[in-house]
Image 1: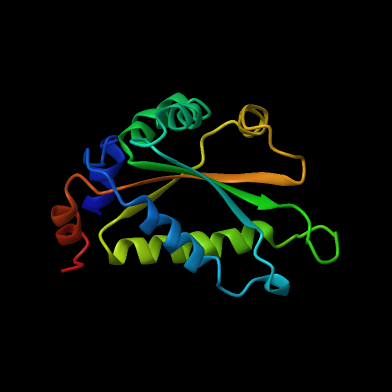
Image 2 (image 1 turned 60 degrees about the horizontal axis):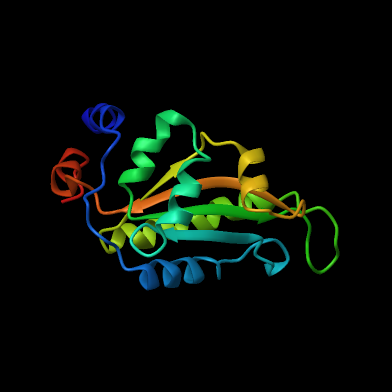
Length: 164
């Protein structure tokens, strides 16, 4: 498929265009309302808007593997997706936390795409570095990073995958 070749070779796919942080936060909140184990959503997020908090944004970029830093730097917003390891209600291990997070992120990606915003997961990062640099408690686990922005060539990509 052509789209996979194009995206694989283009590590700086986001336009230098700001996305609305409040809109992103609202979409994340909406996505967290989906049904999960015990209706207790384990998703938590650290959000950095490059234009509002460059120091936090760069701190997040520096936790990524070198090959993903170019993509991350081109994003308007970076998000670290965290999961609580235990249920709040019972204190017992939440074996569904990554699954629940995947549902939340899939819903967030869908809602973002509907308004022209692309969310790209990034999995090449150091969990240890994230936990240490952000002084996170041992009660959370780092699921993934999300790069958020407007695609450089949205129209061509939509044509390539027949969205129009």
